[in-house]
Length: 440
Length: 140
Ligand SMILES: Cc1cc2nc3c(=O)[nH]c(=O)nc-3n(C[C@H](O)[C@H](O)[C@H](O)COP(=O)(O)OP(=O)(O)OC[C@H]3O[C@@H](n4cnc5c(N)ncnc54)[C@H](O)[C@@H]3O)c2cc1C
Image (tube, rainbow over all chains, first blue to last red; front, side, top):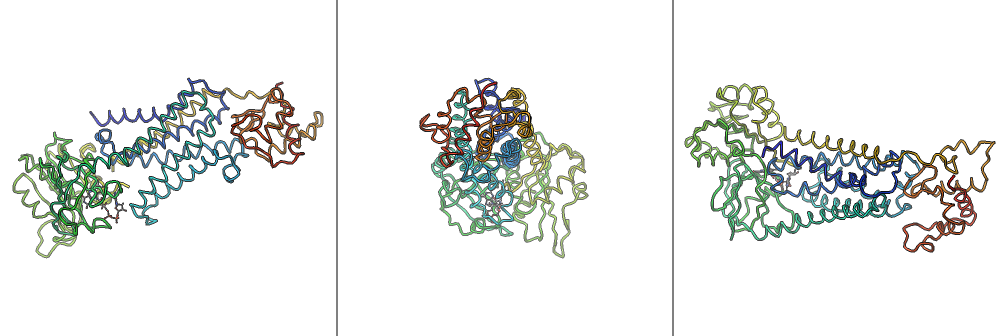
């Protein structure tokens, strides 16, 4: 289905769920309204709570639901919704206080207030901590794993307090239909958390992989190959990615996303090209073959197979951004594709270009032009120098460039620059696809 | 990046839409102010307390002070002021002075299991003043 259409369907679904408890109040028998502002505040509280609930579903990585868009969009949606949700939930007590300043004391002295009111305050406080820690995770140097675990537990705390608040205050929740709906929402979140944290890891545990090869590439990169043990692995579109856990139980939430660099293979074998950048990636070179691994995938929409009608593909890779590209190029070679393709890579030096031999081999097997752009080229270099520029793209791209599809992956400034250049060259936005190696 | 922008625009617009839907709900649901003809109009309009033509019983006024100091309006409303969750207008038609007193100091005694805090830290005078205030809250 067209992603726009399914997007619209999912969005109406989202709004429907979020507003259901409020809408039900209009039909179920309810106490008389409490005046305009009071009702606005209550409505915002209800909607804010369901928005909190759906946040859990958005990051549950349901493959079918996220497939049309790519999971990165869903994560981005989750992040931006958090701001909307925070505003809505902050307005809920703010309106009450503006309406009747006496209510303020219940918020600033929660130890004096009824328990159910303080639970609401606690929930709001946790929400502020959660959003603050997420927005400022990098400046605050919170390690990713620590952040992720706390994010989960604080979120469960925030929604737990919010439910206690709703139940205890029990304004507008007397009608049994309304109560039933809230119980249903509460149980659904429980089910999602159970599925994501226990059922899926348990399933992964029963579909283990084994590391079969670890070999060095240029520029502190490693190729890591895994093969399924006792099952068939999974099918994927070239360019998609998987969450990889190595030498740990999948229950520990110690997984890292990596593009699958191999072409789909019947054996279920997966290869990744991983650059040494931090805690986990720096240890990849030392992983002994035979180590058990788990791969949760495939995810993402960054694949040429979603645009088979293209006249050809242009791959723009900065640094390790070559990983998803090499998957697509290997696949094109295996399919003996006859269309013309181009790949631009941006690197500092010639001996920092991972997979350069393989790219050159591929260019002999299919109609592929490889353009390496080096910032500090060697003296005898007769290729391109500096950064990839609009002028350079213009020079290499064939006249039928508007029928090509473009795949960009690399550092954020590089992605931005390429998008701008392609826009200047009047490439339709629908033909430009990007993958960001940083989702959080 | 385009995709990120699309997600941001969709998310923030969804938030806005939810807000507007809630406003619409409030417009449909709220019945408008009902407590205009309340027994204690000076709750809504404190200036009336000083009206020489219509003096307020000092004991009632003291009770009103206790009501405010104890922040009763966090859960109750009088003359449309405060939380509409538990309106007190007309409460004196339903309850005797003794029942009102118990509701303040020992609500479990009157309705076991009810979720209401006992205000047993109030002095005898304060409770009596509060009850005097509640007693004037009859339906007009
Ligand atoms: C869709 C996608 C595809 C990717 N493909 C590749 C690839 O093919 N090759 C490659 O080398 N890298 C790839 N990455 C990046 C890779 O996931 C990170 O470099 C790696 O997780 C860093 O872990 P670390 O412990 O070594 O670094 P750290 O120093 O611990 O973390 C550095 C930063 O990486 C991010 N990060 C760390 N752990 C995780 C995690 N578990 N999940 C998500 N982000 C995390 C955080 O922003 C963190 O601040 C991809 C990322 C994404 C989102």
